[in-house]
Image (cartoon, rainbow over all chains, first blue to last red; front, side):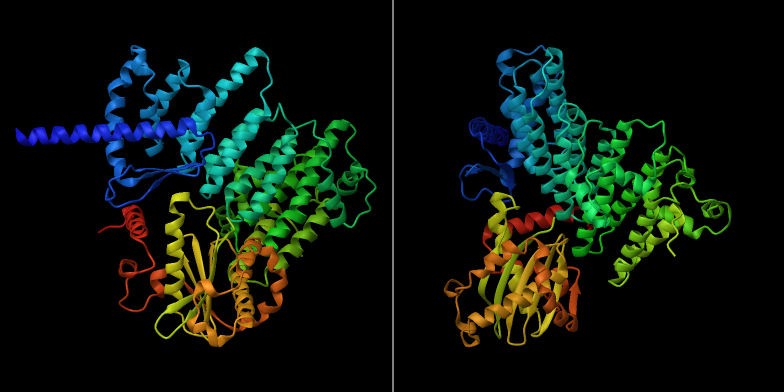
Length: 440
Length: 199
């Protein structure tokens, strides 16, 4: 009997302690508009007998010894009301008082979808405001940069904003997008190869670019800076590839002048300020049934791709060697150039057929696929690789420029470390056997 | 991320290494853990320098971090802590450069008895900021040729640098550089990271 009362007393003690901790967390989050981040600070035990909530110059921390008690308390309290909340049978006094529990629970463990769903229900009944929620969600992401649940909650909130605005016929403000971009950058900086953050960025771009087409050029600059600082992260390259594809489908983008000038200098051409001349020089005169708009669309993409090949990749490769991600990115750029040339000629060339015989173009970048082709000497597939007749692309100036450029790039990289030589050789094989370049 | 976290200059005495100068950039580390990370980097610098022979270079990889050490034949030692993307060549040429400059500024006879606070060598902080961008290293190519002659010993983790019979856990427990909070930080990190190991 004595033992039971002791346990009961202990539980009560921990509950009131947890309650106090949660309230003070809520208080700080509510009142500090510049709160920078939240973290859990590892400690051995409660030795100092003071509050585990650390708060210093806009940084919030929680000592790890109390997590166990607080989390237990949050779970037991929240699951008591979970069912009633979902069925909307809950008294509003309790309903208005759930936020601090949910905050504490999600800061400790952001991967619990039930808690996020409870927040969704509270947003739907207008107890929590969307702006406040975006802020809280960001705070969660400062600790767990890869929380998929937090990102999906964010997108849910954004969708609500967008729906509301389109209903009222208002164009969303650019600040919303800027805020999302900064959140995704923060999460991507926090953990490397953070696909969740980049997926979120892509989602935002897809939904907001129709309203602000100029943001695309800004993003191109941002991603160029990013990949030159995060050379081994495939995610960053993937985002850049997404931007290039997005540019291809955007119509009303003015000529990217800085990239154009760079490309002209690299090609040793005279800059006559007539961008369509570049296209004619590289690929010949366009087909007659092409509209002017189509051609100008091609110019931006080809300029950007060549800039990527001549300047961006070159610069990175000069300083950082031995990163496979960069070589894979180069494959993407080259493939896109070929694809573009074929679109320009309006023909479905043999090259793309060769590449897509397994129905997925993505395999083109896959190194295993190359090994597969290289090792397979038995016939059929090899036979397809041999060229019969030069296509329009293969007789264009672009082809000549590219094959010279690739030859130079490969030979430059074969005098270095073993790993770099291996990467260069693999790339060479890919060019010869998959793309069908003649590099001799 | 391409990043330099720490540049340090130490003197490798007969029994222990002493600090001459250090510079840190820990902005990317969570606020409440900066103190512990700082102490750990110091601990790591000292431990590795004490286990590097004079006139040799070592590079130690520990997770996503790289620790590059160069001890000159006159026992002046330099350490760079960077992330795994930062080019190793640049780290080692940078070490040669800062040690050369340091020995020009401060006479060798003073090294054994100097305290860190008495050393006037503010350039270290400037270098730490400047060489965050490894492209700055283009100016260093001259030294690179000298570098090719010395062999850099590579280690895949810090345990590999330790002498026979030494254990990292014991060194951490004994260390005077580390506060109790940092030691707690170390043990929790060990526990969380060891979930995939048996035993």
